[in-house]
Image (cartoon, rainbow, N blue to C red; front, side, top):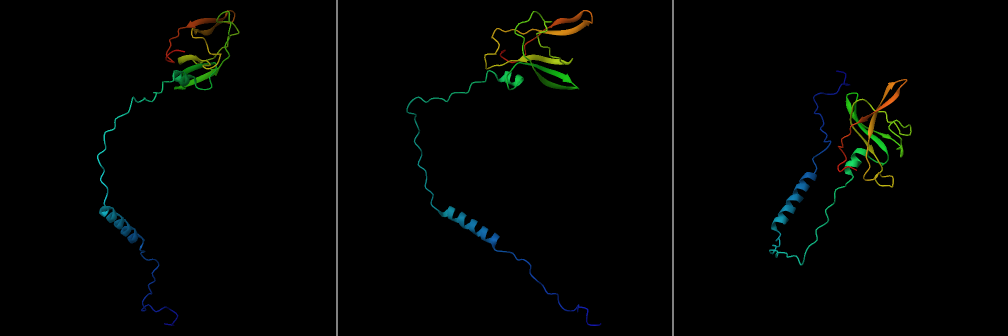
Length: 175
């Protein structure tokens, strides 16, 4: 050999890159000392407590009352105002919709042009209205609701109004 190649017979030097520290052993020793001291330390014994007798009548905290408008809020959401509420089937799914309306305070009949018209889909499972519930625009307690289906009888005869039978389902109690 020419002498430039390393000698393979010489031992390879071993270098320690990292060693096991004393950290885990120290933590175990500290925990063992703490447990031994807790075991040996004399703990005071508690004397039996005397029964407590109330000095007088105790007041119960007031129970929260149910929100009488919770059902109305569920269906009408915020902000309160005049809207037509509908639960309809559309595209194979059920959806809730709200359409903002300004009510007609006086009308001569269901075909009066002053009454706003809310176009709705064909598959309606629930129909209702949302009104203000905190302001002076709140409807009176004895208010009634009437709905009509408007259909075009013919171009010459015009629109025909057919009453829709309504059955109250919500909110409970009715508002």
